[in-house]
Amino acid sequence: MAKLKIARLGNPVLRQIAQPVNLKELNDPDGDLQVLINDMVETMRTDGGVGLAAPQVSRSIQLVILECEENKRYPEAEGIPLTVLINPRITRYSDETAMGWESCLSLIDFRGLVRRSREVTVTAFNQEGEEMVIEATGFLAIVLQHEIDHLNGKVFLDRMEDLTQLAYMEEFETYWAEKE
Ligand code: NI
View (tube, protein in one colour):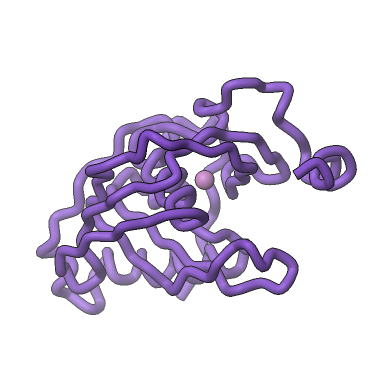
């Protein structure tokens, strides 16, 4: 496995609409797509992300990975097992929304307050090419909306209602964290 370079804000690849993956490409265990998935997992773990979309490693295809270990510092953030989503679609958004602080490996060091649906339903294919349906709430619902946005050329900044609620990580800890 190899760690990949993260595309940061300003790189046009983050603003492209990602192309669907041809599921037949999954059949080759040594093929380009399986290698990319493994490299994305290593990159996400090395950089401490909870999700990574292929455009963030300069591949404009509809592929997202997620993983979050349970963390004693953030007991409210439930763990997410390693999940590979290919050609994901959000098929339902709850009307009910909530504000939450988000960060992104492509906007490293920033945090911003974003409104998202509390629940979403996502259909996608897994690494074996099997279709799956995810009914997500809470933290998982936020991560899914954030990552699937990357496939549509969007970053969390685009979803912010008030840019005064954008902060560097250090200033977030100093001035905002306790208000939550
Ligand atoms: Ni992101």
